[in-house]
Amino acid sequence: MEFEGFVIHHTACSKEGEEQWDFTVCKDSSVKASSTLKHPEYIHICLEGDFNRDYDILTPGQKEQLFTASKIIVEMSRLYSISPLLLFPHADSCPGIHFPWNALVIYPVDGYH
Image 1 (cartoon, one colour):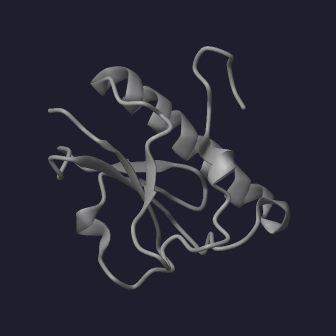
Image 2: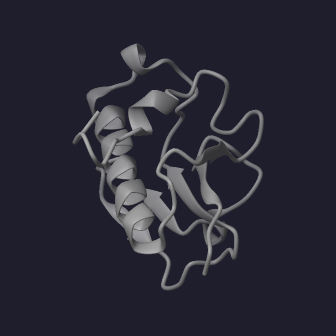
């Protein structure tokens, strides 16, 4: 499969259900993975909770969820030769205009953040 990037969701979005996501990062930072990747063009990652807020006001648990999601992105990038910078929102309102995109960026060459 040749993927074009990653689509980021959060569960505060009511537009679609869990069956559409390849990975769900739960509130305790555990990960639920689908048995197969479901979409031919993008890998879909969903964060449990509302992430439409600036990084500074996220809870420590939400920051841990973002870190877990970034590790998934790096690993899937390595496995499928996708740039970890190809991150896309599910919709204008999901995960929202205040979503802390920079918290998901890990530069594999330089290490974390």
